[in-house]
Picture 1 (cartoon, rainbow, N blue to C red):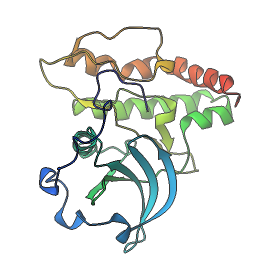
Picture 2 (spheres, one colour):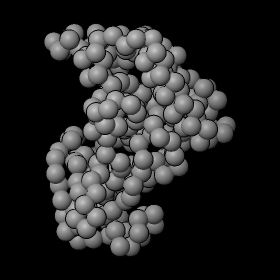
Picture 3 (cartoon, one colour):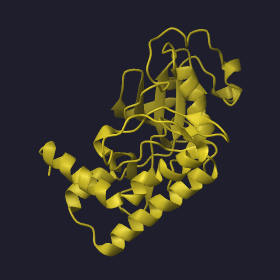
Length: 246
């Protein structure tokens, strides 16, 4: 996850309480249950944060596995983020963008189901391979550009595009998928945006938050990554060296 200033992620608890299933009409009635583990089996923890976590979960009836994002109901921002993540992911339909598979609610949490990608991060692939030939590098950039073009056509900006948020679908390493739309935003005509988001390590140079319009946001926020793709990959390499994993 990236670092955000002024975003919805910062805050405490309690404002999420009192939100019932009727506040989230996109969740089918049959997906509102007392306890999610009557329907699913947790297989593995994939990631954990202060107010949400992601697990590999299997539907007990269909035996199909998903990435399940679990968002605590008692966090003040999670009701907003739950709806926002649904709004964004359900609008997108591209083979290299994380596919939305459903929403659930139980007594304790909100849940977003997405396709399961088990090929590992592009970041880790960079550490392992250390050097991509020109053809593979061009294919990676073409994939990212195509996915970002689709997002921008829907007025959606990712805002935290980095090698850790680009994963391989499986260990054949043939298909990249962009994940983690937690900082993503739907931008509107004539609106001004002054929030500062992303991951500082991947900023090309230090900059402070500034105001910009939809045109500037859609035109540059994600393209900043792909326009300087080599710099971003070098940054990942430097980060690996700093962490002692290079």
